[in-house]
Length: 137
Image (cartoon, rainbow, N blue to C red):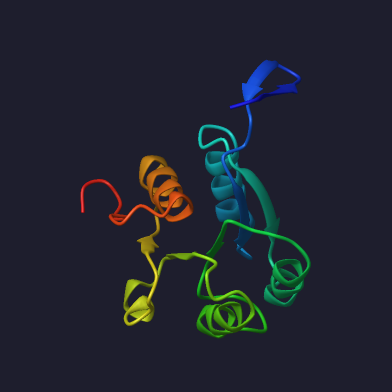
């Protein structure tokens, strides 16, 4: 990997681009920190599903991480729209409502999410690994 300079010295280049769609600011900070710092991904956050869809249309992404309980548009609707716009784009759901995630055809992590599970699942989805189950499942 080519190193990318940053304030603390030299750090390996980002391992992929992740769009986080989360309206809870504490959860959004956790996701962007864990994926961005120890995970070494380039992470962009928006609380707005409509903005997320615009970003997916305008830019290239390696993964979308979304909650289900979002303002204006439910996460299931967002996932459906993402599947129409970018069928090959991996999506991961992070939710506190495990029952609401039943039947969703993408990996689901239940809050509170462990940092290692978040990073390993994101890595597996971006690299196309066949086994993308979180550690310990």
